[in-house]
Image: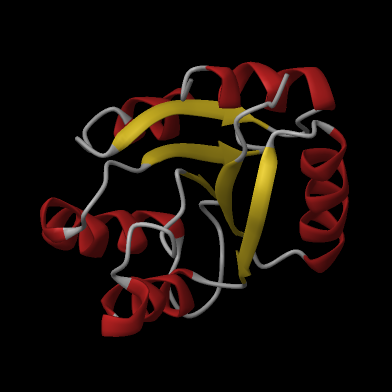
Length: 135
């Protein structure tokens, strides 16, 4: 029995968080490719590059941090909302933050492209659950 594997994108400036999240995601056995970016601008540049417009190159899901240098999560979402309709597949976005501020949770709901707001840290079972909505 083969398991469906997903392309995942982590956008977070914390190298330790990226490393541990990547290890946990790989342990779910539900990922085929994990792309990482340290800020929203790096990710937007990736999405705008013509060679990355192929379905296989794009992630199925994005785990997006809010607080980052250069381009934070909110600015990324502002930019992504202008381009997501031209991408050849639907991409789920989870805003991932250690913030339990109700205003951040509410703000995330104002973006059409955001699936949900998830509070860090995320364990293996939570990643499994979040990826299971793709299948």
